[in-house]
Length: 100
Image (cartoon, rainbow, N blue to C red; front, side, top):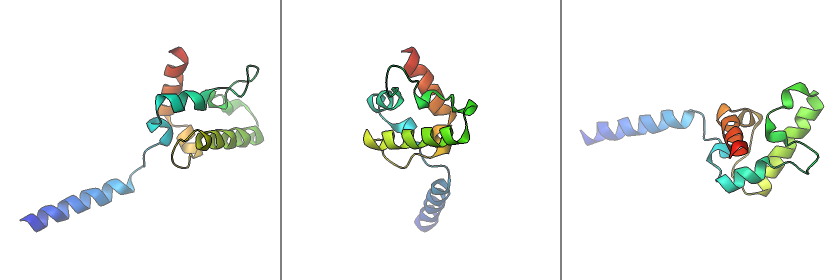
């Protein structure tokens, strides 16, 4: 009986590891996230604003690169991907941080 239980647990763990991993931008602390979304200066909007859909592909690539570099600099663990940047949970967190 205990062997079948162990096999069931192993199967659940194996299947869960195949799923989408945690988004480091969602799991970052509030302080890290606020630093991450700050604009470079008072005259430019943050790339994290999610308004990169109306710019050229070169600007999008530059913005993604900037956000990835900034995440690394402020200690957000893991490699931030373009898909993680576009995650609805990140957009919701951004909107909540800007309101608060």
